[in-house]
Image (cartoon, rainbow, N blue to C red):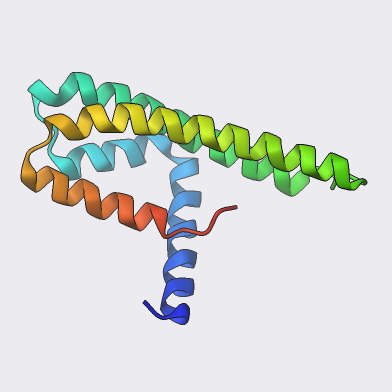
Length: 128
């Protein structure tokens, strides 16, 4: 993927993430419908969807806070802020990985292909 295409894709994905932050339930419902989650898969889906919805809301709140907060004045304060942000992101990633693996384990091969595509799309977005 060339740099220009990656940049355009990233901007599109960030716009999608911003839209999902305003409508997290709609985004979660979209993924559920696209994956065609069955009744047997519902417990694993519910666990994953809860974490995903919370992650979308938290990401939006963090972006708003970052945009409105004063920049820390000193290098140590900036380092502490970076560590706090990365620690929060790691916790979210670990929660998504745990519930995501459990869901992936019960998906059909066709559903896994769709899920792989969604995850690839999500991972291409630049970090905030």
